[in-house]
Image (cartoon, rainbow, N blue to C red; front, side):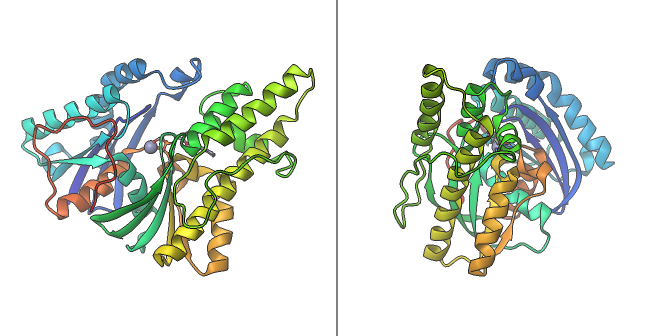
Length: 336
Ligand code: KG4
Ligand code: ZN
């Protein structure tokens, strides 16, 4: 069975062909990061225009690389939310057009569910149930994955996402978008205990997150140093900030794991590329006897393959969409 999948929710245009749900035949990703970098973040209108230009050539490349034709494809999966509305619409329109013209069933995929399913591509042995921590540029969520089509959201961020905090702090410190990898690199030379930043909502069994207070505390620290005419050690700021985020994510995940009696912990989303986070999560899991999984680096950030994997399991459950499928910028996790 072959799935053709499209992903255009933010600043990556991607198409993939997946065989039998878990085997990547092709995963073509065209990133717009260099285009948005000069603006310090993603410009939605530019993102939509770039998707329009790239979506058809990327689909063709995905089919060619997989050495399959459209005739071989069994169904088409596409991200329809959450994300930037104009960007999502490009993928949804392309998928609907192909579905109609080639008479192939359509599957509407939730981007965050796709991030979690990236783990099934990297770990052939992984099966539900497990607890997933999804950390991306737009979301921070703890999700119980009970089965391939049964999920329960345990908690999410009330304000900024973890990746957003990385990006904003990096920008103020003068580093280019996306800030996460820049902060991680900088933090390697810093002292994580140099500055104490606050942790929010750290009471037991509180599975919500809040990173806006931490972000403001870091920005205040930088401004205060500047106003006093004093320099700051950028590596120490990066390391101390990163440590606070990582500790918060690990503590809440461990609390949620014991609360939900999970035995396996799965990391997902762009921020799961962070080595400090995955090392700390792995160590915490080893102490508690939980198995730990995260996607291969290329599958941590946005890609079509993860959407294809999610689409396959939806198709198995008969969860197809019709041609009224529309972009849903604030789509919640739905799989219950
Ligand atoms: O999942 P993703 O590719 O896009 C969204 O769906 O948002 O995540 C992008 C986010 C950005 O905020 C980026 O700074 C962050 O993931 N990120 C990282 C790292 N690599 C990417 N954050 C921390 N450390 C990293 N190594
Ligand atoms: Zn994403």
